[in-house]
Image (cartoon, rainbow, N blue to C red):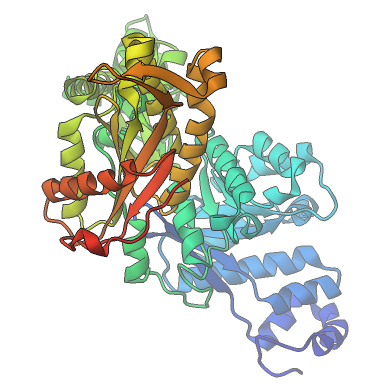
Length: 601
């Protein structure tokens, strides 16, 4: 009998397996006293633990492979993970690794996982089935059927191994999982790899459209963490957050928490608003499928202001019962007598709109406009990773949209619709008060007046709008873009890769600005125009100067001081010819003679 150990040498393991596994993998598991381990999955927005990925002991997996008994080994590992999860009293979700090959070989064990859950007092709503790679190229149709079976039992689904290319994407499109894992191959070094960054961005955008949350696996470097945060990725796991352990840390280090928390920009173009439905939902006590139609009807009678009631099974929202629809149905002859004692799901609209709390108001509006008009009056259900939070109604949605439009119009620049001076100052003060680190970039077009004089104000306005679009394109989800007026813009960067974003913007400017000139002027590289004294000068193709000031907590007291620092930095930026990024490297109040070198793009 081998010693109690979690790390047997492979040759001893193979010998032991051949001798003992005929007696069953349970004997191996019992004799070795192996333990499951867990890696926390953190919500990068709240910095709290969402759940844990459970990992069976590697010795058990190896033994199962040696004995060619993968199904038995995986189920024993699953049992071990769930037992440890329950015994340690972990809160949140448990992600169970399920290989696709085993999934299709285990028909005889249908319902086995539910037995484990009942044994340990766990609910299917706590479990996420994480589907891992298939060695044999499993049939997608069969996998879809198997996944539907799990979902019917109340489990959520997650997929990984998208680095397998088309097969991974095909599975995603078929089963529509609640979670999509970005494999560590994509995450490792993403902060300096543009290809990985673009792949991750594309996966995140597709996931957002399908209401799936993205989990970044293998976040082992602080700069990789900052990059996925700036992308908007919701969830992460890796040694940078917490190490895998039998009893892992469940609180992030203080330094990591500070690096993750960002201040949202409250003033934005309403067409691109980031306001989410979390601003709209209110908790309405739900009914369950075991409640009868008569019970729901009496509730409507007691609460005249209640327009709809959500139906929730355990924590999973199923749909809405609309007050008007139910009363209309009950008004027909004998309907109350026939349906009064039946389950309320017979009156439920099972096509009700159910959205995640992070869904933007704009996306929700688009969804309602594309749906049946009844949803505007019935309302919508709000969930957090499939768990019921509350519901909202069309009236509150319209009121919020109206408020956003009024605020945007009141303080926006009329030409670009970007926030003007007041919201810019408010946002700077908000960041200072939150002790956030950020970078202020002052952007100013070079020789814009001569261009405006030669080409006219309409062409000048078009150039200003083009500049606004290019700036917005270069910014991340936590970055704030403002239009001071004329050809002056402000960006408040919280993205850690702000410098690269500035250089990408300058590349776009170098490509786009020459195209606004007539062919003759473009070929000769500029225009002739008179200065204020009536003297003709040659002005080259328009360029832009960017002056950057890094702001650390405690460096400035208010937006007034930040403004002074930016104005000073802009003077140096304007001395440089061509498209350029000038980074202010002086400490506040240091004389200009100590100024470091200027940077030109």
